[in-house]
Amino acid sequence: MVAGASVHTAGLRRVFDKGGVVIDDLDLEIAAGSFVALLGPSGCGKSTLLRLVAGLDAPDAGTVTLAKNARVAFVFQDAHLLPWRDVLHNTALPLELAKVGVTERLREARDALAAVGLADASDKLPHELSGGMRMRVSLARALVTKPDLLLLDEPFAALDEMTRQRLDDQLRELWSQLGLTVMFVTHSVDEAAYLAERALVFSSRPARIVADLLFELPRERTVALRAEAVFAKEARGLRVALEKGGA
Amino acid sequence: MRALRLIAPPFVALVVIVSVWEFLARALAIPLYLLPPPSAIAVAIAHDLGDLALAASVTGRAAVYGFLLSAVFGTASAVLLSASRALERALYPYTVFLQTVPIVAIAPLLVLWFGAGMRAVAISAFIVSVFPVIASTLAGIRSVEPALRDLFRLYGASRFDTLRKLELPSALPNLVTGLRVAAGLAVIGAIVGEFVAGFSESGAGLGILILSSYRQLRTDLLFAAVLFAAMLGLLLFGAVNLAGHFLLRRWHPSAREPS
Image (cartoon, rainbow over all chains, first blue to last red; front, side):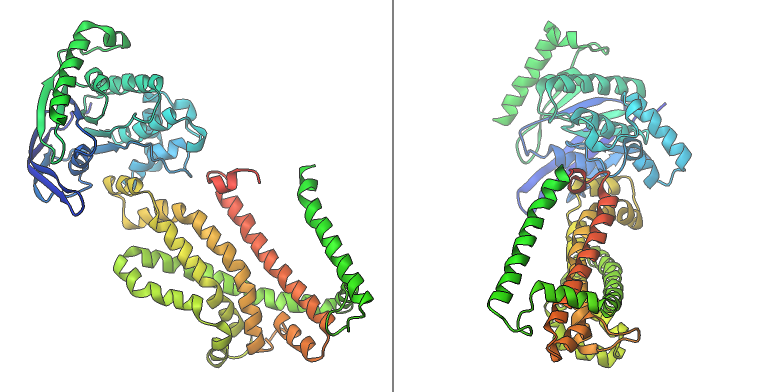
């Protein structure tokens, strides 16, 4: 069982040569095992924040502290699979880079593919898959390392509504099974309210937290929830916060 | 049926051009040494087939050696240059030099350094054909998706793994394109090399044959040699194409579409 990792940032600052101050003096506390949605105007620095948390980018000031030895996985807006590798070997890639033995890494990859419902597609090449399937492979690749912290940067934005709903359900399911910490950047208020326990709303650059909402929604969530009054209320609250922040 | 549609137009064009050429050469009584009719060239090919085949094999060997040198050295240079921007800035201008230097002018140098014969000829083929391999492979490595680089970094990939499992496979389509260009150039480089380097240990190449038939005003044989040189280039190009198709067919759009 994976424990989930807490995330803590203090005085985080990031400045780009072009574009100026993106993040300034950001303090953030994310509890282990929580599912947090990050919302805010386009280009406000949410993606930069994720990259800083992942260690893909270095802050100009301040610190990012993760729980000790936390394994981090990242899912990008596009699937970004290696086009010359079949689904199974794409999924096994992170373990391969970590020098895990071939038998073990392929077994783990098969498990991860089964978890996203793609057990049958393991010998397909990326170009033979639909956009939604590619995204699920990307998710499986992220899960194969058994991460404590999963970072997703608008992962389902390019997909159609049906596929997106299915992947939302799958992600939520995986989160409640695996107990990992999830930070999820999205532009969709409904998606944020449906998936997350907590939402952070950011202002435009430099990114400041303008709202920090906890959703009071049942842990078990199905499509039917989206039609209920409690859901509408939480979504409305989030929408209002977003409009205030964007202004 | 499809193959026929593909082959028929160029074949018809060839027949028309050759017929018109044959007709004009005879009707205008053009001297043989200026423009021999196709039939005379065919006779020359039949008569000197042994010499032509030997010459083509000598030149072909030099071209293949030069091409293989280009493939290995070109890929290695691209990997090296891609390792650092500073290195690229420092060295890339000199690889352009390889491209712009007139090979005819430095061929005598090659003979001085490597001796007349196969070695100088192969190096001439190499110098002429290496730049496209470096340039296109480097471009391929440079244009690896940034997100994929991030992914490899996130999972702690070693420099060597990043090269082997990300950069080189990503650059493979570019490498194949570079090699395609290099294949044709290597034959040109070999023939120019032979103009200067002369006989090789294993006999006279097409370059020598072209020079000697020119001196003897055997224009029919000259045409035959040029034809063999062109076919040599085509053969090498075709081999690279086939290898490229085989390597890329599973995943790359350029090889996937039936053409």
